[in-house]
Image (tube, rainbow, N blue to C red; front, side):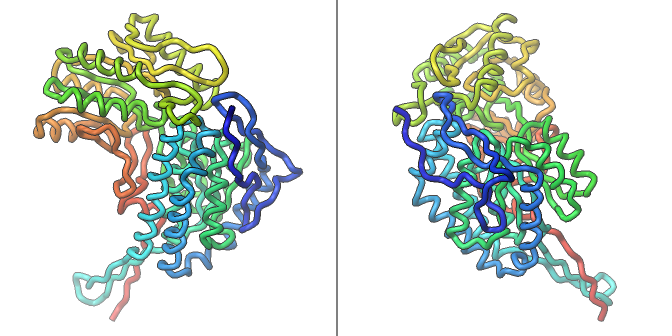
Length: 482
């Protein structure tokens, strides 16, 4: 029996009020474990989007003038509420997205931490004072909020992908319109109710749920009052949004697709490497831009690594994520499972050996088994395309130069992982890898205190760390003649 959906808002949140979409339009939210409809949420129109933008603009001046300590205290209060209600939110997240409860709880701990981190950063926004080289002028720089922002968040981490944008915007003094993914809107609506409870003034945060993303978002992006656009999602969509943002010369930050290499050198501790592989591959059922996409293993240890990884992957339990003993839930929708299956079938047709998994199961829900593939070639689609599922393809290399060349043989550059017991090798390889983040002997790099982001087709801008709040601040210089 499927667990009951926790109470959560289903209306639009605009200007501090919950309201229906224009003409009462709604969209269905489904449970990917069963295909059943969980509930319906408001399906915003272009007019609803415009109203949200109007509310953000109206609230901007007062919010920018709010003392930094007050902004920080709201974030801190929201962090405490989220932490206290972890079980409630975890169930909600699992029901709409599919990940197991323990994965949902891990995301909540991670996502809430962005609010605590930026609560502390709000009071540390600082400028500087200096004397001009000729001594005649004093040079002052100050940091001011960018202004109204548009945030478009994905379905795979429905809380954390929101908090790491909303947190720094609130801390910096920016108002915002947030458009969560139509597949997983409930978590963001729940978060809006928490921020309202924590004392966030109306209009600072506006949440617009819609199945007509392009139609509703484009007028906001082209609105001359908008000053920043931030998006997490596919590179294809990101490119389109960047083009639209050019008209208004918007500040833009993009966290896009990935094709993460996972390098295992011949001197690696294989126990560590397999533990790291399980995290890098199976976190969030593999539906993560940071997921290890290509396992590049030295030819002398590839067989043993593959055997151990397949043994671990085959031991995972698959089922409805609300079950306490479940390790792997369903993929988010049928289309996503079809894509994963297509990549595996293509690899098999080109000679890949299946060490475990590799077949779509029968029954309800969008499940796919943990899968390990060996004996792959670079002609396989899985070499260049993001998997976004629980599939680990193993390729081999002969030396460090080949490993780095293979790792960099992609348009993406978000994250890479490497396992070696040689510190010099670790640093030299890390310096050569064309990614914004590198995990050395660890399978998870995400940390609210560190800058998250990529290079090349994986985007630009950083979320988290000291750098995260800078994305929401303008630098103003004042020259004072004496």
